[in-house]
Length: 254
Image 1 (tube, rainbow, N blue to C red):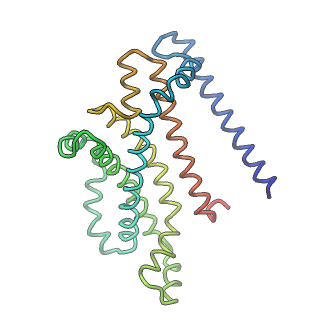
Image 2 (tube, rainbow, N blue to C red):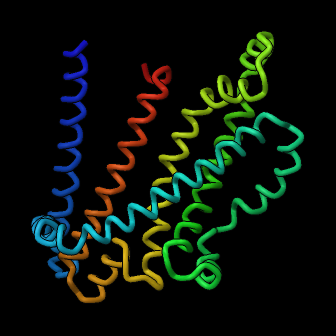
Image 3 (cartoon, rainbow, N blue to C red):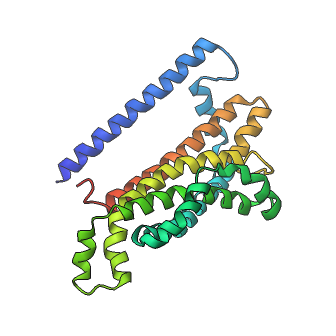
């Protein structure tokens, strides 16, 4: 058993290393072809990342991490129960469907100026916008997963005199959990994109601000250092979500 796990980890590590070699090799090649200060070689960006990580980047990264994590938590706590309820209750789903269909396609980033006016330029407006974007992704995915749940599972638990709460807890939630975690992984990418956008307006904190501030100062090595740091933050969060699926959804990928 231990040897199998070690072999799997070694294989995964090798794939990760090869991917990094490919990415940085392509970056190096492109930098050599273009020969422009706007695209420094990866070595310069990594050197800059190491030099300013503690002094400049960590603070901005902490603010961005806080905004993303809080937004994902709030969106999950709001969207999952509502999605399970709508997926289980056909009448409520039919009533809410027009509202979801009309509001889901609307790009939520257009509300950024409104949130800045109503909620101020601090963390609240940014967290609300990111939460709103991710909320819909989790809601729709959870609702669809609950709607497609095999009725035999529900009937078998009802035959044991299970309450409504027990049906949600022991049937709907476990069955929909893989889809919920998938929507969270997809929502993470969207959340990071929205995060970068909101941190370029009316703020002096966050990794998005740091990247754009470095760009406006023509400090391209620092700019790419910020891009790498933001990518690493997203990568770590993605690994955590992936780990949650392996722990809590072992029946999916045994």
